[in-house]
Amino acid sequence: MDPTRTAEATLLENLRSRRAELTALLGECSSHWGFEDPVYRFYHQSFKVYFLQEQTTRIVGLLESLAPDRSLNGWFREIVEQGTGRVFKLDDNAQWTRLTRPILEAFFHARFFLEMAVRYSTLVEPPLPLPSGYAALLYLYGLR
Image (tube, rainbow, N blue to C red; front, side, top):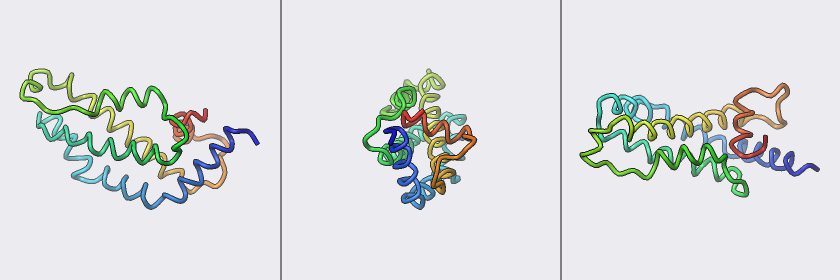
């Protein structure tokens, strides 16, 4: 069997078996405190936007664990790297958007892939035609 097909079948199996965990985390990242409030904090210029990094890191850890033998997409890793590991300093206020937009961007990308993982977690076989969200998920894992 084609190694890419085998890896995709394993990914689908892992999505199905971890559906409850994926759904729970997506719920947290879609809630008032996990989504609505942190985005508001960006516009309010509150240091609390930095808390999004924790959620991003949790999402990425879960996504990585679904295919531990595969490296996540390089662009995705770059976005996450630029939007995590930051510590708020008072001087950040003078460069607010330059310093905090990467935090939001990393969260939004991670949340998108988490949402796609949940959306396609009931699949037993790869879908045809290939929906864009599923194709993006395949790109995340280097399967497309």
